[in-house]
Length: 355
Figure 1 (cartoon, rainbow, N blue to C red):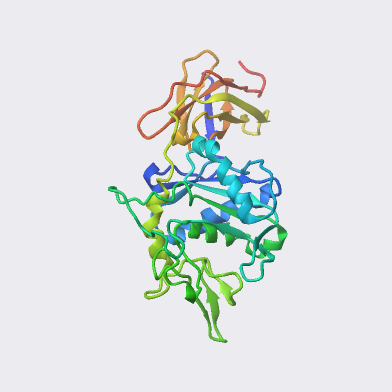
Figure 2 (tube, rainbow, N blue to C red; figure 1 turned 45 degrees about the vertical axis):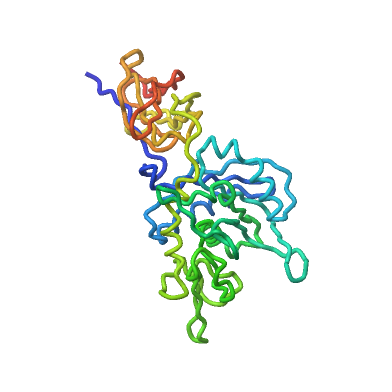
């Protein structure tokens, strides 16, 4: 009897985490932003965030290149961020994004001392935890401070070459601000979440280095860790305190639904191993409610659908052996799964002759 199989091929290194320990981050590229640079910057954020040791991981709302978000932009970081915040609500709800990171082009802010516009590489507002006189920490009965969920969920980051020196550090730097972490600035006691929510910087003339949250103009080697020094320099304490609250900023506003528009493309008609390979992808009307997807196949065509495996994202590679297969998808949370998608993709087996 001819061997029939449909094999899932991982396209990305991803894992599925429990929802209460994940912060969903949505990346949106503004008209002047560079999508590829933005994608690399998001990758750097995911790479360096584990150094926070908060136990809360990052889940990207979309995979690969961030989505385009078209609004009129001025290049003024605060003005563009304010407008983006005012209009991003529907797409934020769709993806259940706790944090939204906007990626713009060349950005400026007004220098408070001179009134002139100066170049910046990023900006993040967290008025609940940052600022003299801010309420700082006001948890609910569950121990979560969600007061910043509607006004401290967004940052804007430059993708312009003028900030090329800080492409890797800016995303996690601004992300740290959204969690109450602060600069080195010795005059900022009382401004950040805790009095010790400050970066560390040292320059002895022989040794000079700074932690992630230190201001860009400070001397020394840039390290990709958060300060953990007792006394006045312990940003990690702020992150551990706030990360669980940020992860609960947004809950899904829609329900689990069967995937739609299941499609695919042939990538290799017949490999040397007698496999036909395809990439299958689909849409999800409520990605915020979905933790992972199940792949089901009817092989040979017309046979009952059988479970082939799970993937954490809305795209998968499949390798067909022996006969063509119809591919359908289910969306799942941690308790149940949707019905099979009504749409399906024909993963054709093209290694002839077939018998």
